[in-house]
Image 1: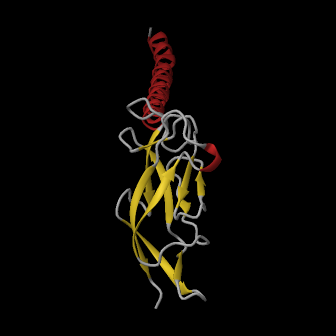
Image 2: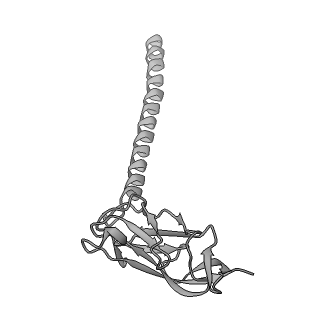
Image 3: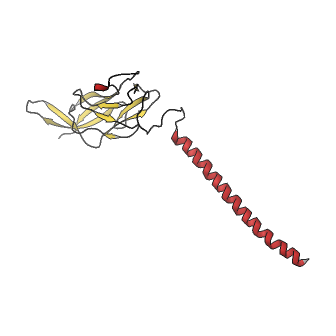
Length: 181
């Protein structure tokens, strides 16, 4: 009887340890799966079911434009030079940015175009944005005012594209400030 009791006790104990390890590993795997599912649901789709805010710009999406991280009242630092005719024009200092973000309450709408063109002046010079929430360097080779208030237009209807399907521009008010000594 002693032999049988000691014989039956030995196999039982390793099974309990093994079963405990299996259960712990299963619990760990289920926890990791649940955590990754929650993480994906938080990052893959916004709560309103709209588009992801860092993917390609698509059609019929409302948006807001941003200059240097602000949707209104941004400052654009400018280096100014005097031209031969006595007028002054400036160029933006490098490191400044423009971007657009999906915004269900935004003033802009991509309409049928699925594109946004940033127009820092009235001379048909532009920068095209291709992805939401991706900072693009403010162009440093485009003439802009040296001082004063102005606007930067985020326009889905620029040039040959034309306005279709309810497309509307967003306009960001900015202040151009000369940093030229």
